[in-house]
Length: 311
Image 1 (spheres, helix red, strand yellow):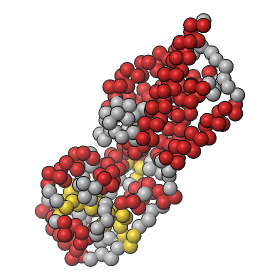
Image 2 (image 1 turned 90 degrees about the vertical axis):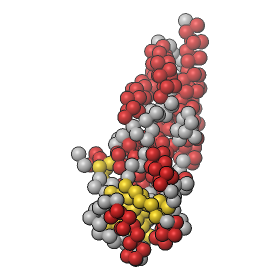
Image 3 (image 1 turned 135 degrees about the vertical axis):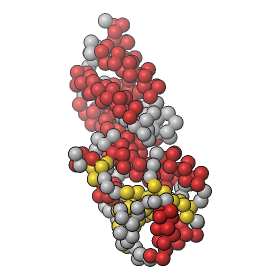
Image 4 (image 1 turned 135 degrees about the horizontal axis):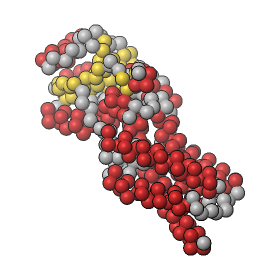
């Protein structure tokens, strides 16, 4: 019996460390082994599970829960029966996610909630299942209830401090645009050459530099949104520079949209010197645009119809 308690203590420590790595990996992951919070958001959206209005809140709450559960196992904060029930729920979610992870284009190598490399998950998941079955047979004395408050409040606060959600994220800040047809003739002529029906469809025209980190991030966001939402909204990418750079950009970000290339002078004439820039173009006219930082969760949600609302 005493031996089981020692083994149980060791297992709780290992589980706590795994959950800490999983939780903090989502906050600080650099993509080499564990992805960061943006990949977590993208995975939720790409699977069509939630919308952009709810996903950022859900991901941060889930990360907070993971870190709190880690502390609960390490410091016996919660009654073992209640904690094991939460552990079982997480196992079900992680197992379901392993299946989803093989159907995902942008982050197909990473499970949705666990965000470990899929090969590492092959070894970690059996251990977690064994741990759950073993801990069901063990018991321990939980610490007093106020220990939970000392842990849960700072944890939830820390996650939102490190990855904040701003008021602007839920505002659609459009900048008025004085449309000049002469400036856009080069875009229309390039589209005509490539048989892109920009004159008949509603397009988001994204001016992006292939070397700009914010442009790459926006391209990933648009890619997962298009795959996770149902929408008639078309997307056109406009690049300055070389063909091979444009192709590499599209492959890297899994943003398989129609695109054209223009000269740097033509690019700056329309988009200016700040990019990415997103224009809403309808019937060859646009009255507003978004700078990349203003293309918020709400703006994306308004421009695309959530897939669950279109079934």
